[in-house]
Length: 176
Image (cartoon, rainbow, N blue to C red; front, side, top):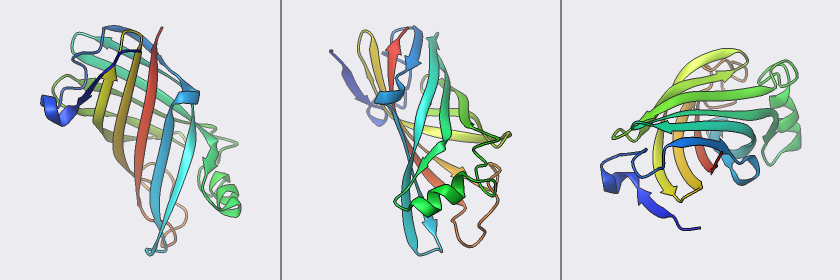
């Protein structure tokens, strides 16, 4: 595969230019969503979610993006915490199995504005697209965003869990 690695800062924030127009599917096993949040204001907790599916449509200087995550895949270094967070007090993964983000990246902005849905609550979230590497049939994208977990519907754990969750996204897109 031949790709062009193009850090967005080096090209004026463009996130779509250089990516062939068309429909792309997110490759779940080649994509990651990692997060970092504070615990008790002192400790940093790192974890991941599994990407289940997603689509990207690139056309006319814009990219429409949808990515779904498995709420039950929430994983950190502590099994007990993982079970609690997947439970009804936080993610309620049984009743709300999917976390989703839908948004749009406009050429020249370097940001993708969209809506994150957690527990059937939609909240606006802007992703800063860091890099795009475009090949003929594969596109690699990295982005970073900050989620206010309370605004996103995850209200439990005040004082135990930090409000802002830093999220790093790495997606592999395959031309459909």
